[in-house]
Amino acid sequence: MLSDKETLNKLKEPLPTKKRPIGGGKSVDYVPAEHIIDRFNEVWGFDWTPEILREHFVHVGSTLEIAITLRLHYPTEGGMKFKDAFAGKKYESGVGLGNALKACESLAIVKAASLMGMDTKQGGDEEDIIDVGINAEQLQKIAELMIAKGKSAVQIEKKLPQLQALTNSEAIEMIKQLETV
Image 1 (cartoon, rainbow, N blue to C red):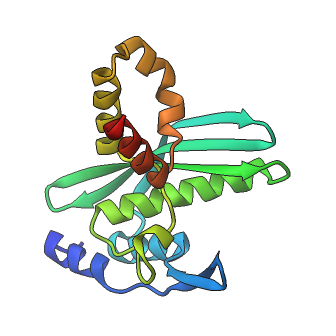
Image 2: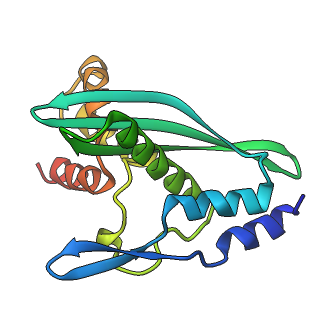
Image 3: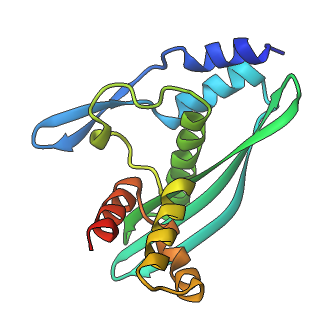
């Protein structure tokens, strides 16, 4: 097994990228989840494990909103550790549920990898990169701002599934709105 320093260095090595159109004739480079999974296998063999802690589904008109909380277990010199990540995605009707779940799980793996120091944002501007779900700090900030605006803990808890389904950019926008109102 690699030392923790060797592991971190290996995780930070550049990964192959692909291009994704983002509109307006532009495209962005991104790292597909399968390349991240391959890197995990290269670093840890098959000792790492993604575990889905929670799945949440909401139908809004013709759209299915999926949110997954994933825990990534991985070995270190000091024993097994983990990173939790959240990803949310909206899917139009007609997309197979299995494919939608797989895509959302892949986004959560990408998010966990980025939390571990892996460069998953190669190329493009921050706003052009895969928009993974709200993070714990954003969720905490939104809850604090909602409490400051007079919402009760019960009201916030009822909204929690909707809040957890927010994308990162939606969370940033919501924080801005709550801070200015």
